[in-house]
Image 1 (tube, rainbow, N blue to C red):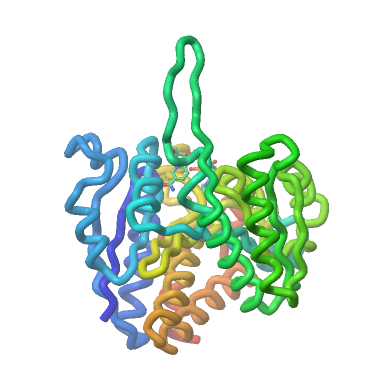
Image 2: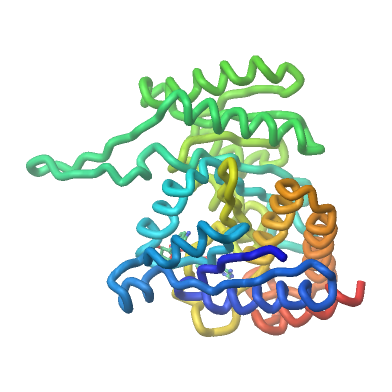
Length: 340
Ligand code: NAI
């Protein structure tokens, strides 16, 4: 039995959480893998109700669980996810972007993953006012840069793909901070002679993600650039509704969609739950590796192929050109999970 903490979130968060719980319950009932899901509050609603966006009790329960699922939260995101990443030392943010069939994607042969450093850069919140100016500290360390570079090369080694790592930075302008990041990645690359290593400035990378997205395999980059480029890579393969993410540390991991709480469509039952359900697939792979549990991999594979087959047959939500509501699409998944 795996204990899964679940932050239900704001905006479309509760709708996505309902879909996730429904899929996990189906797995519990029909596929022999057992989950105990503990719903937790964090985000704008928690702030309103308790005065804290990330209540202490929520953190305590997360720390006692086997893994955390997090639906998107709203304006308090920095006080929830950025803090969780830091206190749980979830240093690697993994954001795959893969072409699915019949999607509004640029091409059908895109298969890349962005490995984003998750603990440093401009996201440490070290900002202050100085007279009439505002200052933000950009922290980049050799240790964190080498650690994320290593994760990227290990990812490229394990993937059955192009065996390439692209290090994305802007060291021609930010010579000290990005200079250190680039140098650290280059040094780590020497331990992986079988992996092709290239460097690319972030502006060129933003362009190449549109011009030749199929050329990428693993992109390793700093926190802010990774955040921006992963929204772009998600859109390149059809949209944020299909974009999952994992925040991984040495002993714990948290899984969430790339996107935010989408207040513009909240409460309408039209959000695409695939981003969150594919995050569950990433969680199953991580649990499978950590616990040496082949059933996790098998169920994860089944979940992904069910989503793949449904999308291929035209059963889709509105954001990717279909007409299914969130609950109808979820129902299709739970039905197919047990029948194929
Ligand atoms: P967003 O990512 O929530 O939405 C961008 C666009 O994508 C919107 O048009 C939205 O309708 C669409 N979209 C997103 N997810 C979708 C889904 N599953 N199905 C269909 N369409 C989907 O970005 P936005 O509007 O800038 O941010 C909204 C809130 O989310 C903000 O308060 C922000 O602070 C928060 N946020 C939270 C994050 C987190 O919890 N990790 C991450 C990013 C933003």
